[in-house]
Image 1 (cartoon, helix red, strand yellow):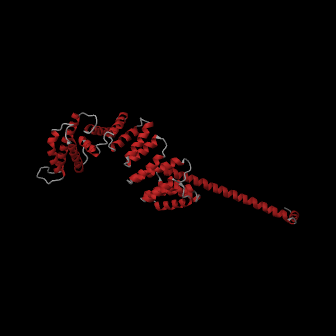
Image 2: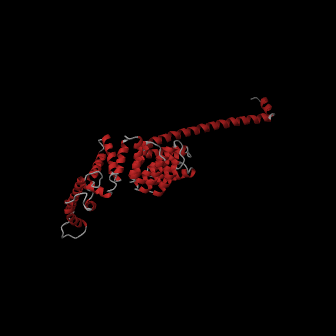
Image 3: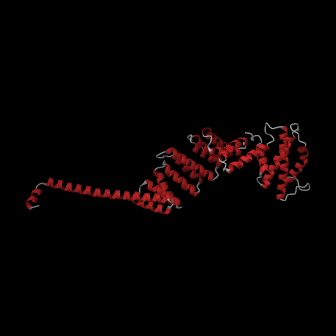
Length: 384
C-alpha cells in the first residue's frame, strides 16, 4: 500500500474499524473451528478407547478395560456411560471403594437411573451388604430404563431373587416371586423360570401352580412336566406326581431324576394301606408287609449303631420300639380287615414311628422303607 492510500485510509476511521473487526471475526472463526476440530478429535478418540474397553470387558480382561475407560474419561470427563463402565470394571477387579465413589457420584446426579442403581446393588452384593443390596435392586426395578424397560426390570427382579436364594432368604425370595409372577406375561419360558425359582425357595405350592399354568397351554413342555411332578412330590401328592413324572419320563427317557422320583412315588402309592378302591385282602397284605419291613429296618439300624434291643437294655428309643413291635406281632399276624377293631391303624402308627425314629438315627432309608417314611409325613395327601 502506498503513502497516498495510507493517508486516505487514516482520514476514514470507520473503514479502519470495520476492517479490524472483520479481521477479528475471521480470526475468531478460524480459532473456533480449530477448537471444535480438536474437541471432535478428542471425542472420537474417547469413543475409540471406550469401545476398546467394552471389548476387553466382554473378553474378561477387566484390568485392560479399566485402563481404557480411564483413558476415555481423560478426554470426556463428564461422560455418563464412560463413568458407569469404569465403575463396573473397577468393581470386577475388586476395587470396590473406588467403584462406589464413581457410582455414588452418578447416583447423586440421577438417583432414578435404573442402570446406576443396579450397578450399586451388584456392588453391595459383592461386599456382602445384604440390606443395601436389596435397597438398590428395588430402586433399579422401579427406576428409569431407556429402551425396553419392562424386560430390564424383569431381568433385575430375577437377579434379585437369585441373590436372595443364594443367601437362603427364602421368605423374602418367595415374596418377591409372588409379586413378580402376578405381572408375568403368558410366556412359557418366563413362567417355567419363575416356577423353578419357587421350587428352589421351597414354595412348592406356588411352583406347582406356575408349572400347571404352563401345561394348560403347552401340555408337552418337558421342563413344566418334570417341575410339576417334582413339586407335587415334595407336597406329598404322590398320585399327581406320578402322572406328571410318568409323562416326563415318557417324553425324555434319559431324565434319570424324573425316573427315580417316579419309582418312589409309585412305591408310596403301592404301599399305602389307606388307599381307596383296594380290596380288604390287599389292605391287610400291605399292613403286614409294612410291619415286617419296619421290624427289619429297626433291627438293621440298631445293629449298625451297636444298640442293644434286648429286653435287658434301658427303656426308650429303639429298644422301646422293638418291645412294642414284638408285642404287636401277634395282632399283625391275625389281622383280617375290615373287622380289625382299630388294629390296622395301631399297627401303622407303630410302623410310622419306627420309620421316623430310625430315619433320625440312621439317615434316609431306601426302597420300601423310604416309601413308608414318606407315607408317614401325610397319609391323607397321598392320593391327591
